[in-house]
Amino acid sequence: MSSIKALSVVIPVYNEEEVIISTIDKIHSILKKLNIVYEIVVVNDGSTDRTSEVLMSYGGEIVLLNRDVNRGYGFSLKEGIERATGDWILITDADGTYPLEDIPLFVSECSHADMIVGERSGKSVRMGLFNKLAKVILKKLIYILAYKWVTDINSGLRLFKKEMALRYWDIYPDGFSFTTTLTVAAIIEKYKVKYIPINYYKRTGKSHIKPMRDFFSFVFLILRIVTFFRPLRFFLPISFCFFVFSVVRSLRDIFITNAIGTFAVLLFIISIQSFFFGLLADLIVVKFRGKRINI
Image 1 (cartoon, rainbow, N blue to C red):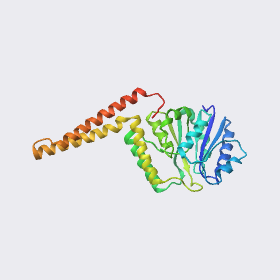
Image 2: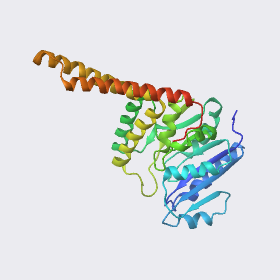
Image 3: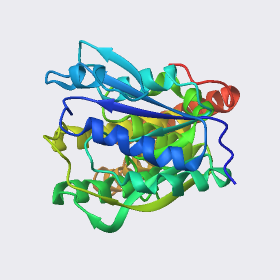
Image 4: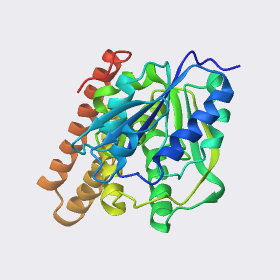
């Protein structure tokens, strides 16, 4: 039994004139069979092709948000979610990569989770070697920092409570890292996240992702989010490393000069400062936990 009162489907669009209408029609066809209240919010992110013209001439029912300037994937999602009226939000891409036919499965699971994520591990997954390697590295990094295995950190097909997304509104970036931020925040804050294996098809049209640049952006973003929510998990290992270095350096100094040198003392001071900085940050996080995040 679905716990959804009203569903808002948010689709960010940038230069997708070839496939956007078929995507919208397919979603309409699927959701009408589910017999739920829904809307489709399409955000045209300053497309330079005929996407705007195609959308404005579309005969079906959609909520269209047109923008002349390209502001990014995350910005478009935020704009669409803000406009959405549903208590649950489904996001997907317009490029034909995600299996829209699996939407009913997502809806059926919403009573058991706060967010359902499409894990790109099905029988047909068209993903480049670099993207697969980056995905593995990011998964391991999150486990080291957050002690949680995340099977797909940035899948663009997911269903989540609007209320949960709004809680972290001011830390979402405007670029492709929106889904990464939402995933890491939900995992660290112990929301119920369920993963459903899905296929991932070859996209229609040209990809707008720059793999190398976006990979390092994801790494820095994960470090930032973990530091924001669980600062001790970031600063404690740093403090421990500097402490070990200071001990090793002290033993070396005593063995060679029979005295502890300035550099060993400096390493020890950095270790203590890192620990207390993390402890202070952790106390601040605990104090303000439960409130909407603003930075």
